[in-house]
Picture 1 (tube, one colour):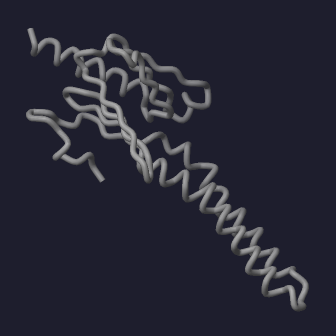
Picture 2 (picture 1 turned 30 degrees about the horizontal axis):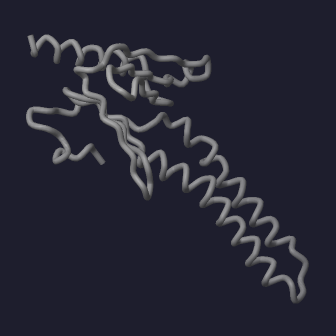
Length: 166
């Protein structure tokens, strides 16, 4: 779902609309078949008797709780985290139930840098740091996909905006 146009200012356009890198979802995705397989195994090896029905229900309840906490919740957090670059600002929004956000006007951006480890480099992601003039200083965006291209695009937008204001 794209960034809502109603939240944009006059003559403001979305340049990039990103979620954190998909690597954030690898462990939650791997956990699903592991938990499902383990729960299925435990349900079928549970000895018969008066405890069997309650035991099976308990196993299923624990498996569902683990999946909700460690698979569904990270996916919802990933889904509701957005890094949006417009022609005027960088917009950061995150949160499933409660939302938090930060807007960094491009006119206040002093420096844009990135860092990625060897693994991040192989996966094509990294941490983008945007330093701005103001009381909050800098903003770090972790696990940005194509971080080097995003850095160049932020610089390009900053340069365009400052050239238009001259």
